[in-house]
Image: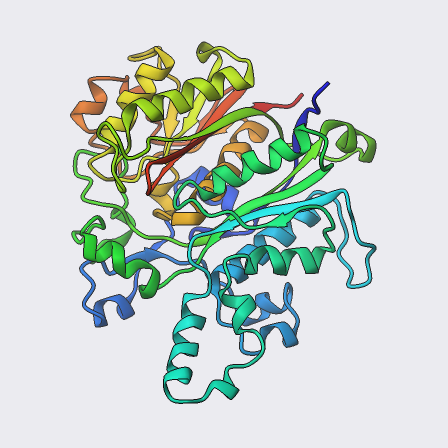
Length: 423
């Protein structure tokens, strides 16, 4: 018998809300976290808007010690630590520096580029010949596995402690990697999630590619427009999402709160063939990822109530909807509800999948569908495929049982995870 896997803790650091309560309220009310950033304008960016979580100095001290914060300059690790620690506490675990090492618990916590501001700081010092002034934390702040190393030490995790990295698919992939470890009996609990740095050194390459919108520098909250006919590119964001996955047996034994069950999922690649490129998806691979996820979860496509898509507000949104209709064999009024959190927080890159997964699980737990904002003018290619009533514009309270979260990332990589309401 394979273990059943449930979600017992959530944590989130998003541009429109830090912490579960603030985030839940924001997504129900359609509140955007996108703002104008003068620094981007000063650096001659075309897109001068983005989503950056607000973290006060006092807030930082609730999660990291003054010693840990000395010379600390890695926004992604900060976001990941806050989300991860919140999720761990939300699952009912206490955190003490002298707590016993827990060999039953581990983490898969992903990132894209870690500590780019710390890299910049270190490079300038090295170029000036100040190698002895780099400090002792440059390595842990800039290595890819810095976030899992921080969380592993803070929480005393003795099972697998690692970092994955698969561009925009990172967070969804981390969930599936942790799920598989528990499913196969190799761990009782896995803290899974992902984080992303913010700022010009992460976002500049995308601005140079001209895939970010430049039309809403004066109206930032209207800038991120997934599925809209007037979408003009994605808005960059940053933050972190975290989930505690646990075997059902362990969760019941602890009498833990259960948010939802992870039924299964699938990961694959389009191999950058047959229309797939470094930046564009192979449609056949996307559809196969969805159908294989459904098969792995042992459900029917007809059972899916809502989809949290990848949907970035680029020209590929219509193709994604087409892929969903073909994979599910559902269209028009028969299509599930579908939404994109990116309308409120932008595209949080490596953190996107995990932040959006937290939103998906909250929908199941609280029985609502969060709205798509900035989508009054649904793209005609999309409305020709699915009913506009399935693209919710204001929060909808409704009965939900099965929800799907999918991510399709740079490098033509795909991941799809299926959640079920737990009663």
